Figure 1 (cartoon, rainbow, N blue to C red):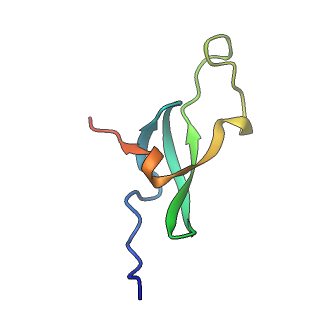
Figure 2: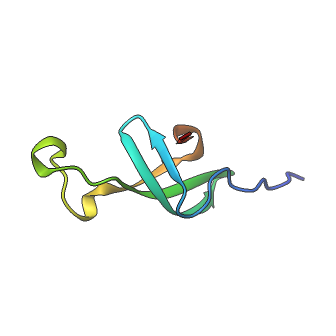
Length: 69
């Protein structure tokens, strides 16, 4: 029997990934892996080319790293 591990990241935690930096909105366990919904930091439209809801994405835990200040 597998023991379910706790998620590595928590809601409102700032993390980084290959596409940028974001804030965790929530997480859910899928196929024995934690997946996170996060919202990217907003940049200017000219630089980022992103405005609104398209800045939210879902990533696997292994694709996400904690931001160290």
